[in-house]
Image (cartoon, rainbow, N blue to C red; front, side, top):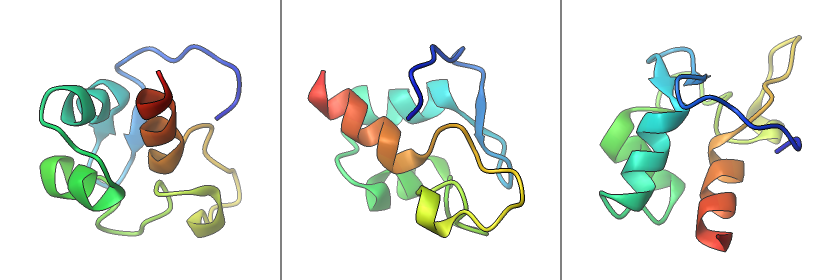
Length: 77
């Protein structure tokens, strides 16, 4: 994750229009501890999977933030 502060409305998963805030909520309030949990609670990362991590991002323009980055950051804090 780049050293930026993202608004909670920042769209992490463009396939299912899942925001950073929804992902954080799934981790902090619903107890998601893995990418599989985040997928279950939000549907993020269940279609093209390019939002899961940088190695799965096949787009010409890479995303700024990925599900695995968010999960690691929240669990670290």
